Length: 408
Image 1 (cartoon, rainbow, N blue to C red):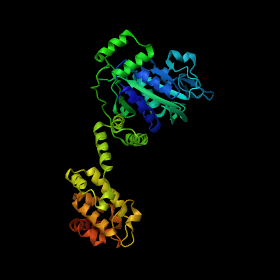
Image 2 (image 1 turned 45 degrees about the vertical axis):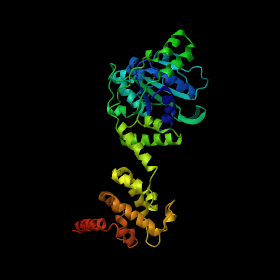
Image 3 (image 1 turned 90 degrees about the horizontal axis):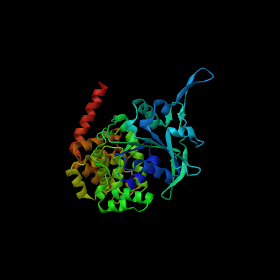
């Protein structure tokens, strides 16, 4: 992901998920500068914590004895506190940027080169990343209103960013799956033009920049042929992915950008499968089946064995059929967009199910089991049951056998 796309992505990530971005890239390409620009844009101060240079006590604090004779940790004085002040004596441990921002709205904590820190530091960091706590300390995370690119947004008062180098290219630690899946892992590589524009903005025109602009291949940003391993689609990641995707949709982002963002939290093949599903489901749904339209599209889905789309249609259809009452249900009142009569709707659904693989029809019939023996069930309508005669017969036998086993 390049500089501008990463900069655009980070407030979305901090708004909609509890994940911290981990900028994975080569040394010297602008990861810290990106964090500084982001912090400045949202009017936050930036605390840069060099993980490779800290001792465990610098990160977790030291113990003291309370008047009651118990022990507790004293939080390190560089951590964000509500008074917004980082003491001068703390600045030999961390670097504070954007000091010229008066009355900062919050704090960005940059955990720099996290896979170069000592093992004890990384263990303490794990608690901080997951909870924004260190022992008895808890960072201020209540929501504050700020702006990003002219738009008002709400962010936590303290947000995290991490940077790391690809372990396959540098002498540093590999992440395990637990740590990998606590981050949004961004393969960060700015474009050469972005780097040169930044340098010109900082230093003004120079002969060096004129020379580099004659052959942009002279600037070395490192390759991006490394992969983020151990990404898992766990329930926790699914929850964050749901929130992230909803935020991206709300922001009306493009398909390519959505794919890049989702690939920071999900395996690539799962992202491709999900976006394919989204693209297909936008063009056909169970209302189209009820109306008897898009027959060619349905044939393609059946031919290509798109179980994800077909299963979704069947499941959505079951929600309607579970509440169906013969001679009472008015389908146009229950489902928006239906343009056919009751009889036509029932026939269209039956035809679709008869064309579906047997296991998908069984999915629907299983969902209807509670209503199966009621006289008002749609299965008792000949317009529905006749096209499904063979499938219904075998299903009834399975239900009968199951009940017989239960009684014996």
